[in-house]
Length: 389
Image (cartoon, rainbow, N blue to C red; front, side):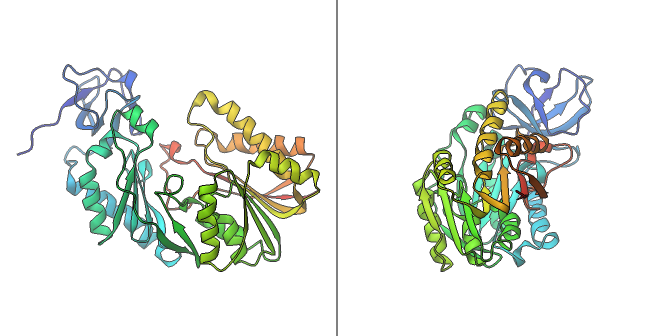
């Protein structure tokens, strides 16, 4: 018979449905469980609240996973949760009809706080955001193998996460890349050779929508990473595609992605700020401009500087859009709200002296669900505009 789980008591009344409980609200136990241990969570009135992970070293001391006292968190629990997440993608969203690359688990959005899993064909990329998910990784791998027989794994955790959550993980052995297809366009996903997972599935539907506006057009893909938007545009018949990124390693993957699809976008290694200034001075103009920079900050104290940087790059990018052309701009900084991002866009248009008409506001694909109680999971802002004059 399994030993009873340690009990962790809260200092104050807890009525929220949010799965995170922060350190200042948690009483320090006499015998502190190891980071990521499963525990019973009890209110200051002695009433049972839930079951989940405890980490006395983390700002997020408790992550509630289960609110039914009759359900144990064990290997079967993980198998059921991951099966439900896969069912959503396959049976409800029917993603296999458009791609073999999609998010399998989106952390809190799928009731698995601290875990993200992306699928690239037979390769599953597992990212840990909590010590608890790392601690019980063998249960996770077993559940994933059940859903994806014969799959390969590439697992990692960012250094800042390991520091915050107090666990050490050098990452798995580098996995060989996978060739995936979405909406008929092929890409090489290389988690060992590119940023994060090696390919960002969250932009799948945004890439598809925008690509159908590119036939016969001159397209500029800024912060192009491994060439997602640019390759799509070329496949859909753009007359010219230029991709700019500062990282030459991802540009090599981008060039390879072009070859996979028998298209030849021109990829240039450069900092977008001086490149855009030079392009504007030279009178360069594009029919479609895409701006998809990396995350600007993880620090709430740095949100204002991040918005300033967004303002500067959006203003410069607008300067090379032809009158009547399309401008697609994105932010994956979760700490920047949609309202803040749209206000930044308004100010960027003012300083650029351009009239900007918003056509569509979107986000990540439906395989990145978020709970109304946990809006932190909603991170990607996508704004599609027409630069009128």
